[in-house]
Amino acid sequence: EYAVKKTYDVIVVGSGAGAFVAAIRAASQGASVIMLEKQATYGGTSARSGGGLWVPNNRNIGSVGVTDSDEDAYQYMRKVIPEDQVSDDTIRNYIATAPKMLDFLSSETLVNYVPVPGYADYYPSYPGWKEGGRTMDPMPIDGRPLGDLLYKMEETPKQSRAMGIFGMSIVEGSQILATTPGWQKIVAGIFARYLLDIGGRLRGMRDRRLCQGNALIGGLLMAARKHGVELVLETGVNGLIKEGDRVVGVRAHSAKHGDIELRAERGVVAAAGGFENNPQMRGDYLPGPTDTDWSAAIPGNTGDLIRAGQEIGAATGLMNEAWWAPVVKNGDTSVVLFSEKSKPGLIVVDKQGRRFMNEAITYNSYGECFYNARKAGYDCVPAYMIFDGNYRKKYFFGGIVQSSMSPDFMNRSAFGPDGMLIKAGSLDELADKLGVDKAGLRDTTSKMAEYARTGVDEEFGRGSDAHDRMYGDVEVTPNPCLGPLDEAPFYGAPIYPGDIGTKGGLVIDHDGRVQDEQGNAIEGLYAAGNCTASIMGDKYPGAGCTLGPAMSIAFRAADHMMAEA
Ligand code: FAD
Image (tube, rainbow, N blue to C red; front, side, top):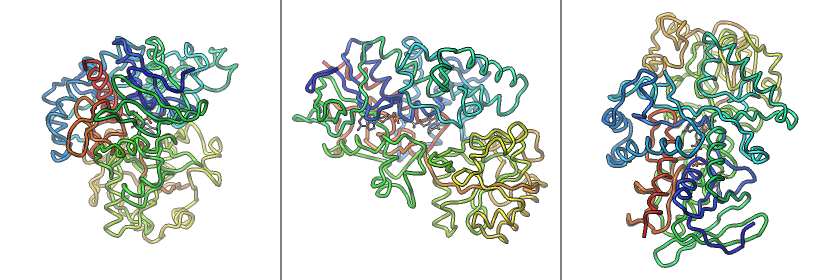
């Protein structure tokens, strides 16, 4: 219960990972904090995510046999991120802050991050690149202490759960998918814990062993409660209150109380996500064609706080950018393909059946590749991802386990009228079903058979660097990313230049202070996460580069507002 007009030290808008870090950090220094969440569920896209954080030179990186330094991290980030988008200082600030934020998580929450071995940065030929360890994975945590609140957290998508049901960490998931020795033991452990949670089973299917983004948000919520942070759901902020030069509060609509006004003595933190689900803003800012349907972000992210900031004179940047990713549709669900694209036996073609890109490139580069190819005359939105029976037998695709373990009849919904995949007995038949040019597709697959034989993709260089090969199949030679499409049946799906979040928004400084059009900080207003212009520019240096900055900036924002006299 809260009064319609009430004053707090800090108001946080949103309930993703950045929002929680700002709230807990401020509350741990004695602030009264309220978090306002528009949806009936909390956690945002952060809860749906892998929960991975990219933390260069983190304290535990040595445990996976990698040596790192602030200077290596700087060299790498500086080379990846364009200088006209992000300053040296911003990069150095991130490198200095992220490990401190992680220390804070370790001391104040149950969330425990470990470096992921072999999870390489995304630009292998660049100085300062590391073969693993900068991407960190949250260890699973027991969600039972959350009681009923657990069921109001955004759920981990089916594709990120074992058999679509059981929680698994990124490390567990990669061992299961790659069937590395001991994977059966991991599955048995996950399954046994699930069955033995009698209280959970009586309540339904949801696994109370929280993993990935659910582990992160679950752990943060527990800490927030410990520090007395109030989290109020179904309360959407629709305006910022500015008096003189200072933001002093927010206007919101609460499902329970109607229109309300809340005041903040120290500051308002906008951590309300991007504009993924605002068709108007997508149309105005992102390259076209684009569609809210191609985003894997939660429905509540409609750019409200970007708009509210603009209304009081805040500057915005990078509005034409997103954290791009190839997406296939399974009914209403946008399924993100993070790793499937690199395995041998799969190609991406346009309507004429022509390849137009290196399929194994980082998922973030899919946006640039698709829209550039479209400008160059390819009919590629949607494009078509096509693979053969051998691929299906061996590799996981969009949440469906490989057919050697989970044959097609066990995945009927994926092949149904609203399903993700179309299946055919021959490539010609598949081309007809997808509406792709048959002759073009035949020509492309015969070229691919030749590239697979020689190990050299003469058109796009697929499998020629460590990033591509990381997701390839080590057992396939001479190139772990190239294979012929020659075994029936054949499978295909339309794929779209989708996203896991937009990354343009309010321009901020190192402390997350929102800047006005003249480059001055707007007093009392802070922002973090996808409602800001990303400090990674239009690039994605490594997995965890969206949550890492969201949480690190939020951490600094809380310190800044608490230090103000
Ligand atoms: P969110 O986490 O979406 O939080 C924003 C919240 O604000 C939402 O709950 C929303 O409802 C609320 N809100 C919106 N408007 C209002 C309003 N007006 N008033 C009140 N509340 C409002 N990134 C990584 O770094 N590592 C990963 O491992 C990773 N894995 C991913 C896996 C998947 C399948 C997906 C889809 C994404 C993944 N991402 C990952 C991307 C990452 O999840 C997002 O970029 C990140 O969660 C964005 O955080 P945020 O705080 O900006 O937004």
